[in-house]
Amino acid sequence: MSVELNHMIIHARDNWESAEFFAGLLGLGITAEWGPFVAVDLTNDVTLDFTTIPADRITPQHYAFLISEETFDAAYAHIRRRGIEHYADPHKTQPGTINHNDGGRGMYFLDPAGHFMEFITVPYGGWPS
Image: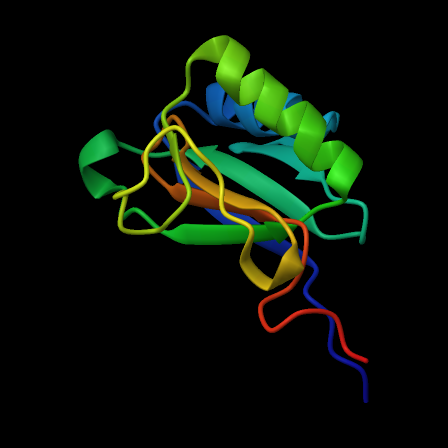
């Protein structure tokens, strides 16, 4: 039996704002809208489905994405151009910089709904030998 993640529903103050923010950082497209959902497809066939709910009902979550070095370069340039606060660490003690954990690069930042996003280029613990 195989098990794969198919989609995740992400609460947002504005589903289009959050979907466009995320897709814009990573050069992805918004692929569908149905009912209350605006979908962004990741390259591994997982869909992030953003849905609007009242802001006081949003519980901030942490979402981490393993991305290529080239995608990181583009996303980081976009974050810097837009003046988006970002951090090298999850405790926000190293603002305006990135980390080099496990031989890669990583950063943390908030999306428009207050979710803590993380981009890394090497998985935690490094690549398997």
